[in-house]
Length: 196
Image 1 (cartoon, rainbow, N blue to C red):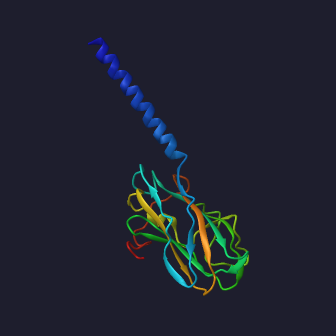
Image 2 (cartoon, rainbow, N blue to C red):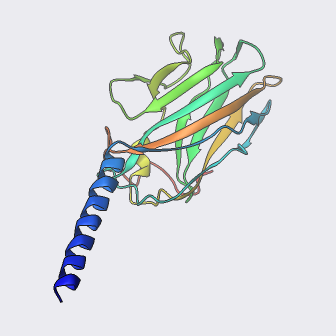
Image 3 (tube, helix red, strand yellow):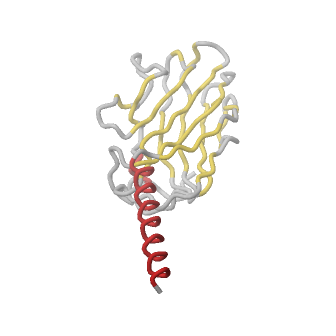
């Protein structure tokens, strides 16, 4: 009997440690990524082929879990192209958030673009002259739109629109960071399920 009680106490301690470790991991975020390159064709639109499968997480509620940032590396056919790419992040259930809007001038588009929930970052409403890769921005839309209780698990995809004929580019890698930094609960009116 004594041995059974000690075993139960030991199991409870181990479960408590696992709980603390899981909370510690979540607080510092979890990242899912792909290094598979996907082409954005000239004058076209559609889902990119390099989706990211997320597993082992809970629901996005903006309190205990949310998307904290999206990191995307874009490689264009030349160092400067007409910034005519629109990009959306699409959740497994079809909810979509507008990441970047097209511009009308030529800009350097090669490099890493980071879209964050940090309210102090510059907003990516369009491609003004100050926009440059290898910097951090808040997206055109609002990442908190996902935080309405939908599951984080499943296949996350990028949906691209290329509006300039003859300009080609690729998303050579991208990642989704989940955590609790700068997240808020979303409004169901911010995003439409299966909108794309």
